[in-house]
Amino acid sequence: MNRRSLIRNVLLAGVGVSLPLKGLWAGTKSPLTRPYHRFQLGDLELTTITDGYVHMSPVHPGFAPEVPAAQVNDLLKKNFRPTDYMDLGLNILVVKKKDQVILIDTGVGSTYGKNSGWLMSSLADAGIAATDISTIIISHGHPDHVGGLLNADGVINFPNATVYVSRLEHEFWMAAEQDFSKSTFENKDLLKTYTKATQQIFTTIKPKLQLFDDGQVLHDCIRLEIAPGHTPGHTITHIYSGNQSIVHVADLIHSDVLLFPHPEWGFNGDTDFHQAIATRKKVLAKLTASATPIFAYHLPWPGIGHARKKDQAFEWVAETYAYPQ
Ligand SMILES: [Zn+2]
Image (cartoon, rainbow, N blue to C red; front, side, top):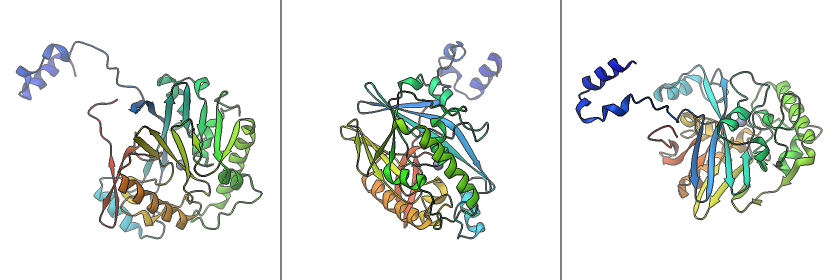
């Protein structure tokens, strides 16, 4: 829009006389196009950055494999969403407490194509140096969470970080055999490929690795809770400062419009389909009762909101912002 048409549009809107028109075309460059979202939680500085997204097509039976496709499509349509695909966000949270810089999950790395693997450039755009990352928390061993630990040459991206993985999770992936019998995911060969990739990554980072158990506290601002189902040692991260908190739920839930109203519909990326449903219900019930803010790895950018009770289940209330920030 050029200056003349901008003036015309403002005048046509009937607000021209009351707006400080001069400021509208002063030519100040917007500082708001940065691909990150920064906010404060008590004395912690939190930054969401993006690793890109995963394009999932079709939606069904990846979601709700035991529910008729028509019922799933109907709910998508009611929410003005496409029925033939769903783009899953890759939201990565950085927590800064004084000189501690804590990264939660690392994205897909270099293997998923051009729609993802943006972690390192997103960090740089947010003014965060890879060498400043002191702690990395891995929610679970899937490739879209551990892939960014290494660069394309197989060298660790974060030379000064200690990497925390739950003991259960580490044992599961490093075992000679993985039990995928409770997963509805059909392509078991692909699961084997994932397993090999994760084993390779865990082996490479071994000198940096620190295993934890349920309830582990880090830096007086993080509490790690095992929430099994998606994987055996899948971990959610409670982040707190004073009486404020937010819970990073990782892969507890992959769709706002499908799985909040129907947590029982399930997701076939879950290692134990039914345990994941039970955990999803239990954690969402707790977070709803306490009205705790939620950060979700795969929900639409920037992945922040609340769960609210609705009918017999829940709904996602995304945080909104008056302007990009
Ligand atoms: Zn994931």
